[in-house]
Image 1: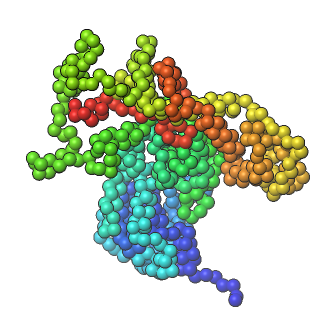
Image 2 (image 1 turned 60 degrees about the vertical axis):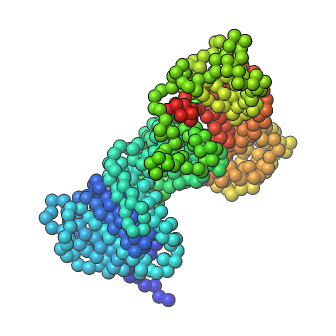
Image 3 (image 1 turned 135 degrees about the vertical axis):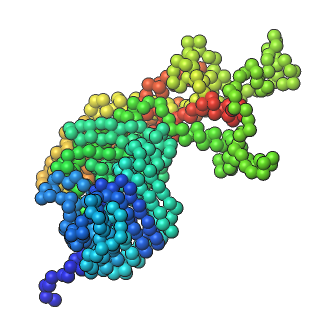
Length: 609
């Protein structure tokens, strides 16, 4: 078959395969165009999961009539000069509109700011109409109908209408987080309407991630060598079952960069279970010359000139913020406990009770007194003991055996002296009850001590070079020459962990020692895993992770076990160590070590509020 030039329509359809993957891709490109146009209000309407209709309306500066034909032509853009290292907008390739028009029926209607007339142009399956007058206010409307009608085979690869609708919602939310000053309206016959009002950054994040995120997260503000990282990182106890609630931005652009997401996981490695994922919103500001956003037409991937700097900044900033936060815990555990109390132990039961007097419904305890609790005036006050120590009513049996082991209060320890208060009892030989000035704290003694031992081990292990276990004969591991080069370059860093290796010819390394703490180890597998990690992230975190995993196992077996009875001084010593140890709000597996209940919530349980 002779070589021939492809038609413009085929070229556009090939390009559309990368730019327009699904309806959500269309929404992403068009919403980013609206933001680049200075819009302060963006309305998105969809039907059929975006397959039947996508309409994006904005109040941006619009497009002059003479430029409409250029707007739907490939590689025509107003956002880029001749310098690819100075990209300051979300879009810049000039591919979105022609790619969409090649596989759908596209109508572009716009009135340039300052112009009295609006005009429109249509692109149907790659064929462009003439520009004609239209009725429209200031701004631009892009309407896309019958997506993929020109390439029906692509329709078979789309998911259900509900899944495509959800994907569009997720795209809009991701973009909206980075543009808090823009009002977003998302509507259509295939969805529940969503409106995100313009406001400040944290208000927008809370509207997208959840109202509790503001109180269950830690602000991040760090910089290193001209790279700045800001945002919010969720507490370890707010982990989710998937990574859906991880929002990462580079110079305001939402990305799904593998290295940045890997750094986020690494930052929580010691504080979250492996099957849980942190919630985070991170904004990275970096010189555009130090990052390449032109990796893929979808612009979701980026490449950094110094990925180690970016990874170290993310891991270090989050870990430092978690350590500085100290004992702060998510309110989720206490809220779930309150729900169970109010519903009789069934968390799935409704927290509303029928009101037979009104024929409607009322919240639990809605008709209780709202006055603050006063012990001396309460009809529910404790029975007053007589001189012999017995209850004055005479109705309470004196042979009742308490379920808890009471701790003799230490006269030197008052509840107000420390964040975790003073120990008052141990119940079921595992839970320490402490009194604080505004409530109580319930501590899981095994989980808490496990974290304390683990942090002590880590400090001892990583504060100096680790002991090495020398091999009787060096282990020769064959590797591709590139992997051998990477390992040789990282040899000095690896030796601090007890792994000593050196080049052994063009395609092999000789391993002379391994970390003693790992015991018997599969040397070739360890070395190949490290080579893969260096190729991906250019770090040796994998070896550090293995060592930390061993330390976590030792801590688990060496900590105070459930079922051990503690003396009062031991309970208080545990509380004091928790207050002084970073990350003590969770154990090594991500479980909470304590739950705090406020006095106001306890009083509400008994109808005193």
